[in-house]
Image 1 (cartoon, one colour):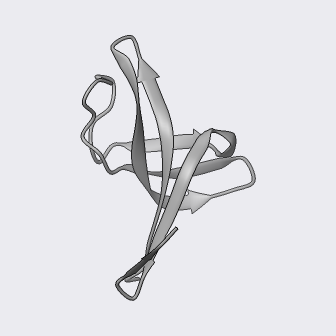
Image 2: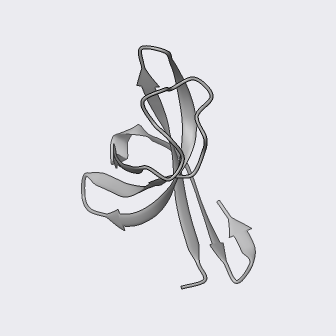
Length: 72
């Protein structure tokens, strides 16, 4: 329960494109589900805390925090 898992992916809309962190809630063979952990600067169609689904092929980075230590 104290561990945190996150992935970074690109999100885009008509106003721009940016890479943002997603706090992971579920994973399967093709997608990662979670909640957006960033407040977008350019992408207006998203907001921090919003549920998102990301294809695994679009992931650009990952991290996890276990017992207060960040890995990734």
